[in-house]
Amino acid sequence: MKKTSQHGEWSSRLAFVLAASGSAVGLGNIWKFPYITGENGGGAFVLVYLVCILVIGIPIMMAEIMLGRRGRQSPVNTMRDLAKEAGGSRFWSLLGWLGVVAGFLILSYYSVIAGWAMAYVVRVGSGVFDGVTADGVSSIFGQFVADPEKLLAWHSLFMILTMLVVARGVKGLERTVKFLMPALLMILILLVVYAMDQGSFQQAVSFLFEADFSKITSDGILTAMGHAFFTLSLGMGAIMVYGAYLPSNISIGSTTVIIALADTAVALLAGLAIFPIVFANGLEPGSGPGLIFQTLPIAFGHMAFGSIFGTLFFVLLFFAAWTSSISLIEPAVAWLVENKNMSRMRACIWSGLVTWFVGIGTVLSFNIAADLTLFGKTFFDILDYLTANIMLPLCGICIAIFAGWVMSKEATSDELNLKSPLLHTSWLFLVKFVCPLAVVIVFLKAISVI
Ligand code: TRP
Image 1 (tube, protein in one colour):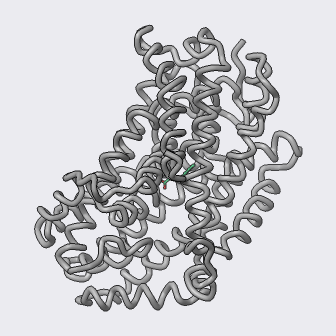
Image 2 (image 1 turned 90 degrees about the vertical axis):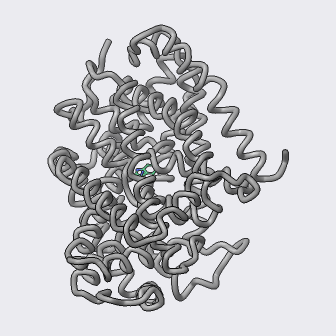
């Protein structure tokens, strides 16, 4: 008994790969990965992150896509139906809910940062950074985030653009990502070449790939694991809802590997573009969320045709963020359409308004409310920590447990349809034992219980 989705299907495997990579590749790769790597001391952190992608990220991504395709609805309803089918508790649909909440919270700050990228399109394009020193670039950034009205305006614009695409269904997106993702990759490679030539490339390579485990803390390990979920868009139903629109004949295993590889490649390239500039200009690798906004403009300011490439880069960064933000809100919108009988348009307006409102908190946390902290964390820090380091891994293990323990082996092997039984057994072993245990151990370590 195969179901079909009321929201439509992707037209091909390529369309799904592009949409899912569009969701995975975003601010997480280019903005977040470099700055958290800088904050956590480099190599050892990168290694832990790569291990997490391989051992936790890939198996859970397969599980999420599989659940989505089997349920063919919004994550809340998919979890409810699949639990019923497998004779599990109806509380499993709470998992879908937790995902919807996580999506709102992430998008609320994601949109603010995407707004920065948009603002930088205008700045770099107008030549503000031409020939500017590292200090100059930092102070331009500082003045920008100190202005709540500007941040709010860009945040609002980004939310409107996101909701416009979601309102029209995800079809239009397919076509856009097809051009954008390769273009982004090309500009990134160009930046790496610039960094090789002009920056302290060797120092950056050592920083990124030489693991010094004395530099990593248990909180750093939690951040690396949380980021593996964040960057692959796992643990909140985004990939699940994309899986719901996946035609039945497409192989989930190989498709997942392609998406994870593309995502990891973009993150590492971003690191190789940014750190050589950081070191060559004596900047601080651990300077936080402003890192790319304080380093890349230096490169563009000194490059031939820098303002053109720079503009293009931030345009592409904005597009990468756009294709990701859509997947953050799609589970909520799909649920409103399915259960509240709303039109897609109305569903978008409501969910967009809620997200926009929560986003104001993040806007203010960079200026007026920067001193309003809890455990030394601002509103933005708390949202980021709570979602990426706690909610996503928590939902992630629940997804693994559901796929490994609640669903029957027949159901999972029918849906995944892997090439060999050995592959299926290995996957089952990972989702049944390795993923849940690894996440629990990292959690316990971070709260210093072990
Ligand atoms: N993966 C995206 C990035 O790296 C962000 C994102 C999109 C996301 N959808 C998600 C994160 C779902 C967690 C869950 O920028």
